[in-house]
Length: 399
Ligand SMILES: [Mg+2]
Image (cartoon, rainbow, N blue to C red; front, top):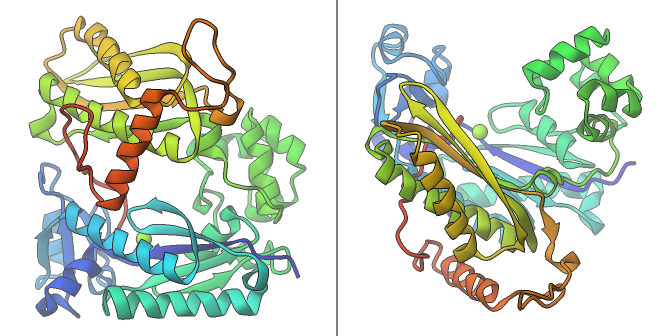
């Protein structure tokens, strides 16, 4: 049988389960989590009990009351969810090889050796479910998917909720997912679905049979080829962030919208993205900033640089771009994103004659940045910062 390489864990109703964990009187009750700054007045997460009554992400608060008169509302507490996320990560890492934390409630574990066999992978998954319940919280459930690559593991994880455990491999594909719509698959955007239709690809079966080279044409990108090959079960490692760079974006809560405060959130995003890039041992050669204004308009710009992973230098570039952006005189900033593109592995960076740069080695400042990363990782929070910044744990799309 095809060897399994990835185990994907998706926490079910994560925010609501965490609230039920810390506040036992909420257990077994319909519960909806709302954004702290609830201008939109919508639900950001719902407990299983609330979902059973038709309440989900995006349900308006007044609708939720109509659907379920006894429903309880609680404000979203991101710091709490981040802490639980880190506890889960620690528990998973003790049992298996935690490869990546994919989001606030999704984790990717590497399989190999014994666990590349289905029975052993399933046993590991059950062990992980039990460990999360025993060591993190009795109310926490997750759906686990197993696959020969990240894509199939992720799709498998979405097949059964809550508390699911499913696998996908060429042995049960595409039958096992033939009932899904194209846009149910992660990575099939509206635009891609439209192009697939134009190419007479109407359903999952047809997509599965597609020649990967043809997919490349439909996507206008090598990503299409990678997607179809992954769907067909090939060992396609996840490289998207490494290829397209490191980005961070944030929709700002009202109190961070004045430009002077938004600027600090951008510094924080820059630090975070640079840290992830160093962890993967990459450098960037292009730094981009994109800003949206309120009530309308926006700005974007970028700067090319010698391959670097030095937070101080990147923050300097960020500030320069920010000053340029401010010439547009924005009143309020509604969202901002930074992007470190044109990335290159540190191991491939050549020395530069006019810079004190040794080939494939970190500079003094980059080493300093890495030391800061180590300290922050040890204390699980940003105890050391590069000057002022503003943390802003925004709203994740799902919980
Ligand atoms: Mg989830």
